Length: 326
Figure 1 (cartoon, helix red, strand yellow):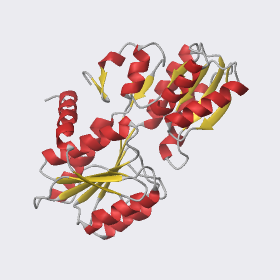
Figure 2 (cartoon, rainbow, N blue to C red; figure 1 turned 135 degrees about the vertical axis):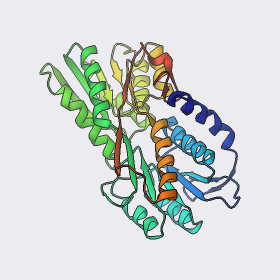
Figure 3 (tube, rainbow, N blue to C red; figure 1 turned 30 degrees about the vertical axis):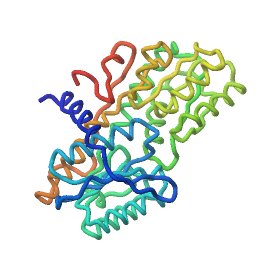
């Protein structure tokens, strides 16, 4: 079976597999577990489930783990380090065999991963790296720099390599935010007639991006484009621009989300860059399974998978972070 079809099948299976009991942490984060049956347990922790990217990561990893015969525990830490620490403590107390993690901070997550390692529980990072080597058994991420250069090159082309633009950046604690910004500027700074008039974080959040974009528009009504570190911010920025009757402003994001694809097909956002989160999640679970069976993943700790530019030409082929034929 081709990888694209396998990924789509896993996503469909995840919907059926997600029925479970829940417990709620103090800040509202939910933990979900499949029924215990004496099988080994894989814990899957990710960021806010308000973002379809993280929902897809969780559901894909869950479906793959259960396909391989594991019980699962899934939860969102909502980018709270305290909640993530609680989740790790719970996983340790439940003698999890492995943890699949989209972390709450490149530095702040190191201690929890080390604590799990000390308890004999390996962690496999997906999407977000940590600023340490030799603690996690794998760090499997999109090639964020490569993906950012794809988006920036197309953005510059759409802008005619001139004009004023804005950059919305992600969480400062997330390595991806810095890498993507560096990737953007490795391209955009080559064009002397392109001027960045504002650069501001919206913390990966759609509502914050809407508010930030409104404020920037008041100060810089002359802008011609907005390039964003992820799609949730791009969708928020686009909404603010449409509310201000500025459909002429070019908006480009990064993730390959369903919302971004829909916006592109409507002629609103102009492009996004697909992060292959389905494949990353499957790879993480498969490597955890390999490690638990043999003591080695057989691969280097740090692994990257290239991204794909999504425009009006292929947005219709994008379905839940899977591009048909890829």
